[in-house]
Image (tube, rainbow, N blue to C red):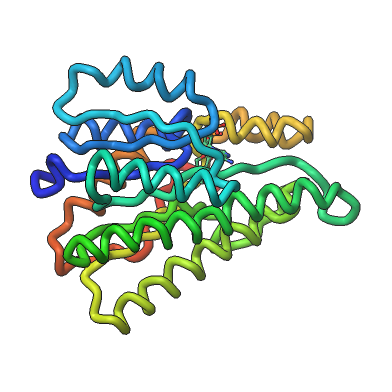
Length: 249
Ligand SMILES: NC(=O)c1ccc[n+]([C@@H]2O[C@H](COP(=O)([O-])OP(=O)(O)OC[C@H]3O[C@@H](n4cnc5c(N)ncnc54)[C@H](OP(=O)(O)O)[C@@H]3O)[C@@H](O)[C@H]2O)c1
């Protein structure tokens, strides 16, 4: 990880769960981390916890589903930190609703957050990475749900949104490769992690009980995986990394 010390990372969804753990790990490892989310108070709380670490955490309020917020956030990065070297597309949501007759508004919000926002954020980050010697690493926080549809009720477009992330990671890798770019792309696919997002399963009483008893990862396990993929030498590209809790189905 030493070669990333002092470099700039942009982490979406840094106010809670996996994103907060990734941001903390990168600040511990000496990076300048721009943490983006809607809840500024949570980001500021994290910033004060990370004050005595080698790197620095920069809280930035933005709704990733608003393109103008993403553009403004990268303008801030350009103005204050010059560029970005690592992008972690982590912001994501799951909301319980039936695919058969649920509200389209929920479907739209999930696809906007998990798919479109990720593509727009990537595009903005790549502009800076390419201006700066074409070096960098894009990490999409995907899911095991991005590789296989399983029998979980009320997940509506969530599986589809994460399958899109799998396709977007590989499409980006091939596009960059065609241009001879050195920028690396990784899809990171966790199983169940103990965070707020899994409260979406509470809508189904039976499922909630199963989830409560199921083995779970900690957000820090995913942060350590980010450090691992970043820490591999430049000629190594971890394109897909699946992390499941031991003993999971
Ligand atoms: N937990 C799991 O079991 C699990 C498993 C596999 C994959 N994942 C993936 O891991 C990622 C992180 O989820 P998590 O488990 O850490 O859930 P979480 O604790 O609910 O955190 C989600 C984060 O995304 C942010 N976010 C949501 N909508 C946003 C928006 N419109 N603009 C900006 N930020 C937004 C939230 O911040 P604000 O609310 O402050 O905006 C929060 O920081 C997601 O992509 C999820 O699909 C999770």
